[in-house]
Image 1 (tube, each protein chain N blue to C red):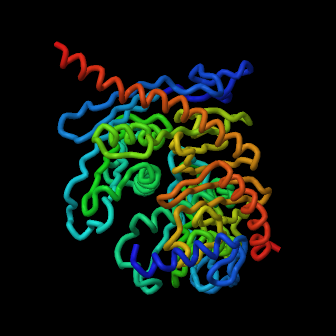
Image 2: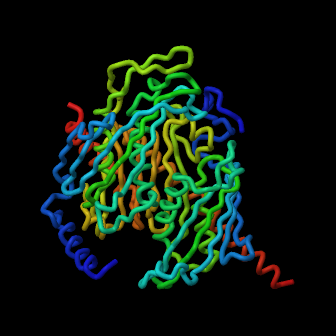
Image 3: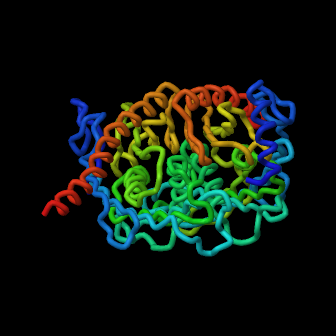
Length: 262
Length: 245
């Protein structure tokens, strides 16, 4: 930890103990969230999300591929994250590293475990051909809490996505004119907390992430059930913290969900 | 591997491998079984067979990774190609990369890393046979390997999962229960500090079920913690006997 961050840590910790934050928010306040859909015409679905100054662009491409052997009747979902070097001085070019892989898997877990996409409807020919949904998360500006921003943008892009109409004739998939929306049946929202000096704050921005002890992400599906959890960072939690976080996450998720699902 | 045919729990509450809802799989742990490593431990939990080793604290390679104020903990969780039904490529998968990271986060709070600035502690978890819950069993063994290496620690870290099968919360899922069940909550814990250092979840649980699952995992951890301590002591009982002879 650099000297400057240590100084900030004291300041942030002192403010947090009074229920305040450096940027003026309360402990349970999100930064302003802006969602734009359909920003990339070439993609089957896309969404750009601004969470304060954090900016994430998600593109969805749909192709034809093979199903996994253990789910022959289901389409395939893959989530990949690129921490694009233009987004932060700390991001470097090259294949996805640890951080990008963890982020992608946390976003993936929310979508998959809530069964957000009805993958059963994406089967063309059992065991042979299915639709593959490629979700590519592009981080454009990094100012903290990439998990929540990426999860919102991913859900936005999937809701915005259209898949081509097709017909299967003697094992041949024929693409027909026109599009239908992707069969969406759930809307998971990730809510991330930072634990700093024994206090929980929702939606940590960059400076808070730099000084936090630990991170907890709780993803809530449309009926208020928890569908994914991920603890991060070198600190720890107790059961009380986790249960408090889960309660707050449930409230926050239903607020955020309204931005996407009317 | 027996496949679950429809029912994972019968009407008497008995699971496919004959366990009750709050019963761990038969577990054996051995400490100090590799001669080259500074510390090592081996765990068998049900059909899981996992070998862990610690090298260090020692000089960091490459040198620029050294931290000025503390030791760098590096973890590698890896599955052997023959550890699962279908051969797994030996190259690290995305899952293994993520697990290596969360395991590092699970163990780091237990170690006094600040005692060894500019060094690294390298921890290896090799899953020789996997049958569900390998990240947890790996952590339970890895913490013992760290203790065996003589690394100063705040507490042992112990890990266990709870999950949901056919509407019922159960402890320590095996592979088929994990695949066919409704949820899985792996958790790592330092009992003396009441600190949860790893928490993940997939599947779907209500808030109430989530709370129960955490409590059930913690119960499992308490049981495993006893076994961990016994395994650690057992190594020195052997040493003591050798000295007597």
